[in-house]
Image (cartoon, rainbow, N blue to C red):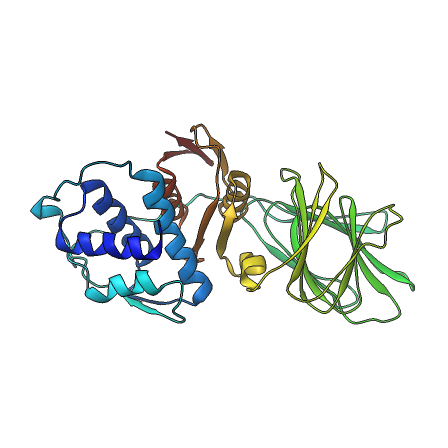
Length: 341
């Protein structure tokens, strides 16, 4: 479904001639992306929102004869909503405004999962080991002034004091952003699985969760060299806005580019940004953000999800959007989310 088709669908909604299924999807979409009275979106965020409605319509609506929507279901859209959807892929900095919800409508309380876990720090044989549980983040400063911002479910190990020739850090599990203090005399090296990433004065993000096949190194600033540990190959040099994916199964390295650093390190600000994410990507993100385990008991195994969420959106709000688009439902028991048909 292209932009012009979405425009036509929105026009039909405005006239009350689309099917009840189409009307439900459009209303849920606007509810989810316009909870607040006003939102300013950049190109990337707006395109992700448009991708959400495309996915939702394509995945949920089976071809059928159109049926008029009952009068009680029709809710008129402001005419420029149609223009927003049609021009979303082209417009920059579009301002969305919506305030037609009845003032007496009760607000659903956000679902909060209590997280009683804490960050742990141990020292053993001159090495410091820091672990963050799912749902918590932590930033640590090393003795040379370098910093490590750790996502949930992450473990790093580093010496209490670096040697005179090198600075070595081990990302044992998870995701972290490293900002290496400038020190030409001592290279800064992060070991993650089969890869080693060498920098002098650089900020870069490494994602290496055990449940994912890929290890990803993304360069935010400076310059790094990524090598396969123990390999005689020269490795790959990354420049800003470049990333390298190493597949632990195929042992192949692929270098690509990214346009928006928030897509890489948005987790530091509490954002959830998905661009073609599979189920494991989404499950890990929800686990790291909310401290929950996600189990997929549905028959939806092929995921290619695009969408974004702010730090203010609760677990239930995020799940509402994702499950609506995937045409599944969810239940939450304790700290586990179950997805079902």
